[in-house]
Length: 125
Image 1 (tube, rainbow, N blue to C red):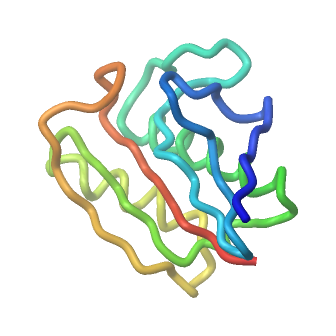
Image 2 (cartoon, rainbow, N blue to C red):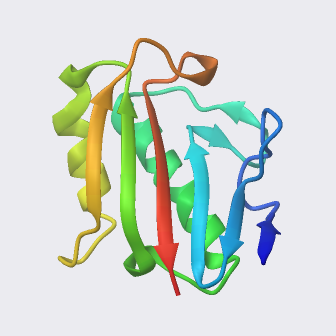
C-alpha cells in the first residue's frame, strides 16, 4: 500500500508529483531544490547555500514522519556543474555522522528553476 506524504514545512510540489511517498517501511522523497518553503521561492546565494536549503527541505520531510538523516539509505545528487562537487559534498556530508548512505552524483544540463543542485533520497524506518 502506498501513502502520499505532505508537509507544509517543505516546498510544495511544482508539478504533478508528491513531496514523498511511503511504500511499506520505505520513503521515496522527490528531488528537492533550494526553495524556501515559507516563501515558495528559490533562495539566492552560493551553491553551498542552495545545498543547505535542499538538505533542510529533506530534513523537514523526514521529520514529518518521525525520521532523521540517519534513515537515508540512498541519495541521488544532480549538479548543474561538476565544478560545484566539492562545495555540495562538504555541505551534504555535514548532515551525516559517518554511516553514509549509498549515493551517486551526476552533472546535468539543466535543473528546475535553473538551480545549481537537486537531491532526492530514499529512507527506511
